[in-house]
Image 1 (cartoon, helix red, strand yellow):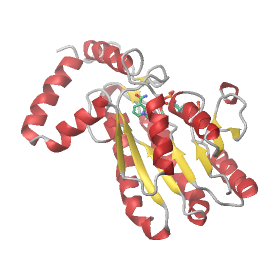
Image 2 (cartoon, rainbow, N blue to C red; image 1 turned 135 degrees about the vertical axis):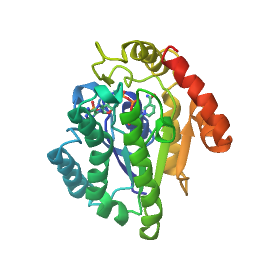
Image 3 (cartoon, helix red, strand yellow; image 1 turned 120 degrees about the vertical axis):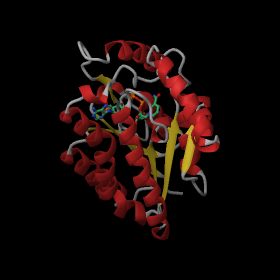
Image 4 (cartoon, helix red, strand yellow; image 1 turned 90 degrees about the horizontal axis):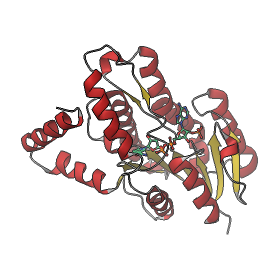
Length: 272
Ligand SMILES: NC(=O)c1ccc[n+]([C@@H]2O[C@H](COP(=O)([O-])OP(=O)(O)OC[C@H]3O[C@@H](n4cnc5c(N)ncnc54)[C@H](OP(=O)(O)O)[C@@H]3O)[C@@H](O)[C@H]2O)c1
């Protein structure tokens, strides 16, 4: 049987790196994109493409590889690359907001469009990395949450739109996991602003959740392999107790009660 072919974006660290290695070890042919190719090990089945998926030339290089090496057929695309621009909305520049959407949303959309003919040919699937902040807003993370909410609306619509084409679409919604995510956050400059105290307290919390006290990222890689191999993918998969807990509050608890709890949590996170 022909090995299955997968493209994974953002593979120098975190979930991307683990998935690139785990899928290759599981016998998939993997094309891993990264801006730092030296970070990945040499493995059979793993081809590393040095590229920035936020750049049009980078995305074309991915499509060229799929056409030239895989006969323009692709079994799975994982839009994983992403980062957070955090801080008080008022202190963030237009350039920071645009960059957040360019990497987390527009790059995934453009790459998906480029690869859709190959995905259709193989009756393939698309797995988009959202977040617990793809269904819950959070103070001082408004732009990151907005980018993940955008990814959710787009993916949910594609889930139905691509069904007749034989292409499945899924969202994964992790809570806080130990990756380089916390280190890679770009914080707005709150110095001297009305938000200085709030930011200090929130920053500690956010960095703790994506480092020491965060969940084990191997869980996420394992879950994505299961999704990619299942006969039918559910639209949404939450990973981590924090993601399940917040989902319960947001979607299954009466709205007034959920708001009361989340406002109290929000105040605590901001040192109130
Ligand atoms: N860790 C968490 O707690 C958590 C929770 C919910 C959702 N997520 C989501 O999971 C995905 C993977 O994150 P991770 O936790 O594995 O974090 P990570 O270790 O920081 O890895 C993120 C990857 O995204 C790419 N990336 C980061 N900033 C970029 C930029 N400015 N331009 C282009 N590419 C960029 C990088 O790829 P290269 O350097 O290889 O190019 C990097 O390998 C992201 O979409 C993130 O939003 C993470």
